[in-house]
Length: 67
Image (spheres, rainbow, N blue to C red):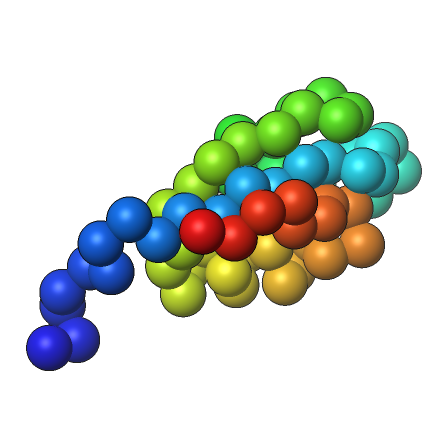
């Protein structure tokens, strides 16, 4: 089913770029991911919406771990 969640799938992202002098959409996306300072890491549920947010700021974050 499309509405079922994948059990235990997580992704860890780390902020590697600064949001200074970036469009407000990118800054807000980082805040939505729970990142707001350099080298902070956040473990998030691996969903298509989170993947889309990461793709929109791929130049400011890196994927550390996928479980």
